[in-house]
Image (cartoon, rainbow, N blue to C red; front, side, top):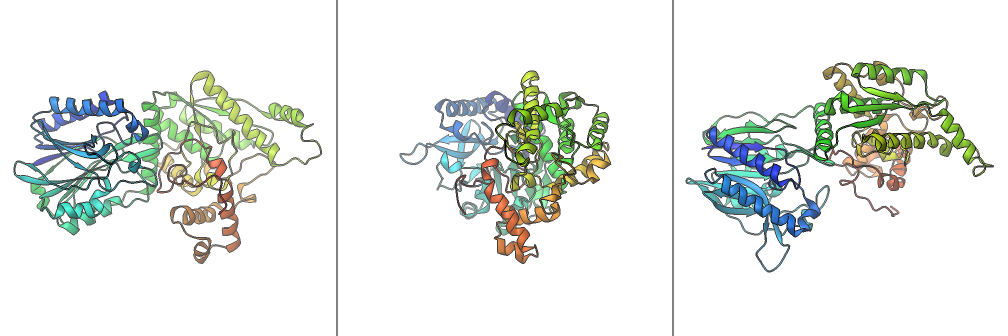
Length: 530
């Protein structure tokens, strides 16, 4: 038997496009000799539709699309993912189902373990299944599982029925610290069953799906694998189930983050019918990396930068920015805001009378820049890209209605130390477009004379180490201190993180590249004392 792993990029609610992808891919696979074509979780409607599943007309469109696929692919056995109506008298009205379609007949296996935390909440929409059965194709018994059912007791229930192999359809969001493939390999070894996993690829708002669909033999060795971060169609012969296979390899983290953000940005624009982007270019590492990512994903002709110097902006910041713009050959404006900054000070002088200049006056610059960028966005339809990184988001070193403006945050889940690694990767693989001085100079917001980030923050390698322990690994302050971090520094950093949730609450959507991105993954009560 020849099985096709169909890894496609779906658009939530775009039923015509999704159906066309499924039908054309199934026909192509059939022409190439496939006996079974496997698509990913909720492939009919795109994953995850969230509250669209509460709309009767949306579910009706799902059902109609399934019927269309059945009619047009009557001679092509396939497994697709779709919402399935719960015909029972209790529970949610839908199941999250894998549908086995053959000769116009449909058999389903519905998801049992519904995620209700972290980035997804399927329990809100779907009923959990408690029925387990195999499907039969030409005498071959197949266990179908959906999502993380493959990692837990539903797989055990199906294994007792003695299938010939496992097909898992999934939509697992990308994170660079995810060990999902290793877990799948262990499942194959545990049950001594070949396992085929087809994952969604593409991005929907903040969630990015790597794809990298994969097939393991009964020893957990890799016998086929789709590409990462792009559509792909790979084939597996059941005779290869007995082949030696290869060891599972781990992708380079910086490379995968680069590819994930590129896909996330590209899909955000394509699926929203956006074309052009604008960003503020400061001469610092963050905006330089965002410019490089945008040019790579959207094309230099679709990216515009604005430089907004004040008297505190160093000459090298402007020069470095101009050098990068020359290297990327992308368009820009220079809009000095020194006069605006002074006028703002004059306008506020009576209200601020009797106080000393400080953070409020410094942040006026950031808010002026945000207003100018939004004005340009409104005027020309360019979508504003946010340039804040995760380290800044965590400790509140970004300005509401200033550098926190934007429709999409590219680096909001990338620590500052990772931003530097991204810059090096970009220069190695995208034509050395970031000037060396941008990478090597001390980071600064340049809101006052000779300002440096390290005036008020620990060095970024220390800061990011503490943040990683706290956010990704859920470690307590005492546990972090036990790893060798200075106690006073740990207390200072965690105090900052806890007190600025109100700012993160107002941040733009952040492209998720870790297991703990702010937003969906990190859901903290806004008004809390802990």
